[in-house]
Length: 379
Image (cartoon, rainbow, N blue to C red; front, top):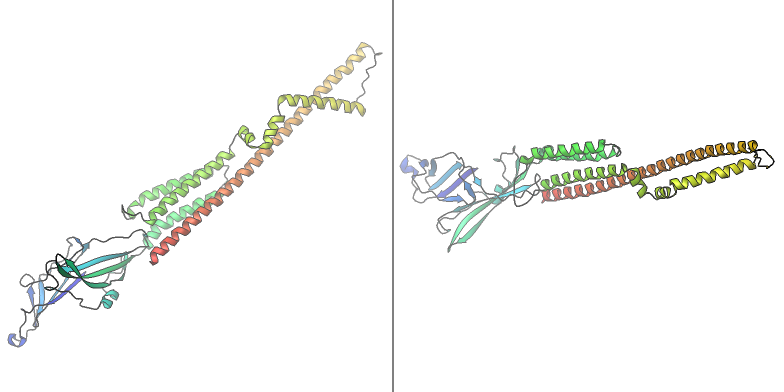
């Protein structure tokens, strides 16, 4: 900071005509009186170059021009980081002399000081917005002390943090959303989402030093990272739930399906046997009725002729039982396959519903975050 201090000392006045027309001389700052103007916000001694001389002209005006490095305390508002702006105060006042002894005034008007950005290094992280100033008197210990307060309003350039912090996080969230289009009945989705979560964790650990450290208020970007990780965990849990539902065993599926319960109720071995017997008898009657096989039960036949139709009837009944059992088995397999297909379709619907709910949460979160950042950036 370029420090310019000007005051009038009535004891340092001379007539230039009496001293060969000398209007201005340089003296050591230790040889004359210098006002004790200090900056109230000083917290450490800066590495300022030592300028041992000051200028004095014939009218008694003393000019003390020197560069100083200020290490001061500033109350940082980092909630909107990296879209934040800071207001750091520099208060110049006399430490010992009251306003009756040493009064302060601005060398230039407050409007010119506020809009002057010529000497500010505008190629760093911060951008100077304005330097408003005001004069006031502070009442302390029964006396009034004059002070001039400068408010250095600066704004952070967020491009570096957007590129290094926000864009990678947004890319990972977009990839996580795209991963929902992987088939849920394969383990690829869970593996992919686990890899994304692990990569995001490593990214957060590496970027910890880029965030400002504070114990009073959490920056909004810290909330952004925490919510992003929570959404990734929620996405992984949702995929695990869908895969768990898809890989239910047959008994669990039957317990959740009404049609499968009915199938269990009427598909036992006893019912199968009764149905087979009934079908076999009915089929024999139908075949005898339509003349497929004519059975002669006349008592006039000998014993041999009676045994042959009985043996053929028993063999035919066994064949029919096997055919009915095979038919029932195929029907049961078809019913199980249909039940499983219905269950898979239901799981896909649940997956789609959870995906839409996830998108809704992500959209609300993104809108809220952007609104807060825009509000704090324009405040």
